[in-house]
Amino acid sequence: MAMNVTLRIFRFDPDKDQKPHTQDYTVELETFNTILDAITKVRFTQDGSLSFRRACSHAICGSCAMTVNHESRLACQTLVKDCHPEKPILIEPLRSYPVVRDLIVDMDRFYEKIGRIQPWFESELPAPYEERLQSEPDQEQIDEAASCILCGSCISSCPSFWADDDYLGPAVLLKAYRFIADTRDTCGAARLARVSDRDGLWRCHNIANCMEACPKDIKLTHWINRLKKMAVVAKM
Image 1: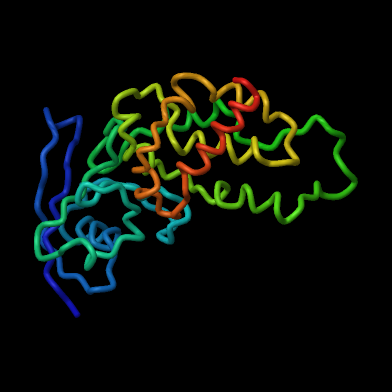
Image 2 (image 1 turned 30 degrees about the horizontal axis):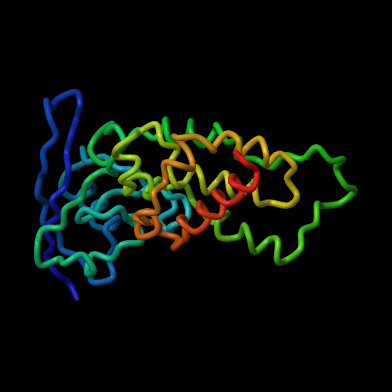
């Protein structure tokens, strides 16, 4: 069923605007349309200057993460009908990141923090003739953490990060856990040392906003607490 929906979209062009503002657009949408469908329709039918990121449109790449009605969401995963479309739907960039233009944010610092924990498999053992085997129970310990798509929504929703932008953030700590807990990786101790400081593990206060924001329903706080236990055992 078609409906007219008003989108109240955050706008900011650093080449033209002294400060951000919002602009309303009314579009006709179907009940099955997503927020990404909606802003794409605005761009192609009303305002070609509207800027945002998109890629897969299937909640895999994480590029369309933004703030919808004050909550961090993937635009491609969020149905318009679930956003109280009887009122203007507020669409803003992710919080806590510098705005490049409109709904596009600069994620360079986020990626730099991920790089600090060396998010790749490392082993000091000789490579086997075939693959490195892992038991099913061991694999289950990292499966959920490995499903993170690095959209950045969890950091955008984290009060600890709002208070201290040096904090590594939940996604980075989760990525560290994914490799530290991998029984095939032999460099876990070094990674654990990198995240065991005041801007790492111990800045997480179990507020759990990250879990509400995660589009993959990852229990980030649970795995970060698992990482804390590892650090305590290792006396870090």
